[in-house]
Length: 269
Image (cartoon, rainbow, N blue to C red; front, side):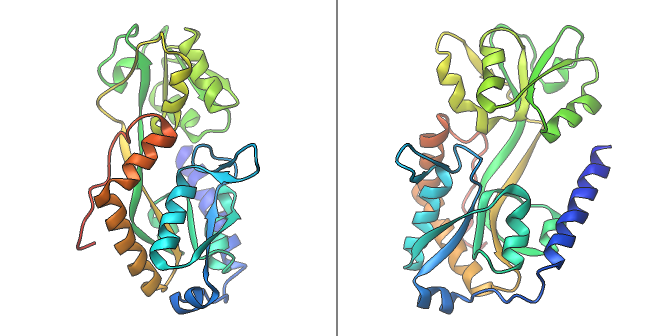
């Protein structure tokens, strides 16, 4: 079921991208001449990118995007890009690069290029010291209630792989953590990095992440296919940002905890 849904989504993505074929991406020289780097950011994905009370963009992607633009020697121009728009916006030359937790996979790689990884997404279990379990399989038992968000792909994944649990669905990241913090659910099985900041709302709860992850995905920066010079410059910039600790420090600043699995910089990328 989940595989069919994934393939159907990719088919829609490919058709959308195909509708824009023929648009030639701006070269690095053109970006330098324009003096701006058009950066696709997800407008509905705190703490990657969101607007503050003054209407300014803030978040992990904003700090990283500004650092990348500065490394190139241009200004950042933010382009709100919903999740399904990321690949079509690259193919149609509406953005130069895409952030927004763009997970690497083979289907997207047929349509766009990737830089080296920017950060990881760790599918794991977030729970409390009150709940027993040393692996994610230990949580697949009767009487266990997992909190999750409506529409998340992990809802189907949990139904297929953890059939003995009950699932309580809510609408936001904060509400998901609230269920566990208030004892109305036992755990969350999700890309846990994005949930950690909300645990600070419950300082009396002894939170823990099950040490063994379910799997680790790598998110990179999306670039139009064949834009090799821009990709190379971004890779060098990312190596410097990783090596200096800037990316990990920025992640912890916005998500309230270190990245569960960090990216080791590779000078040979």
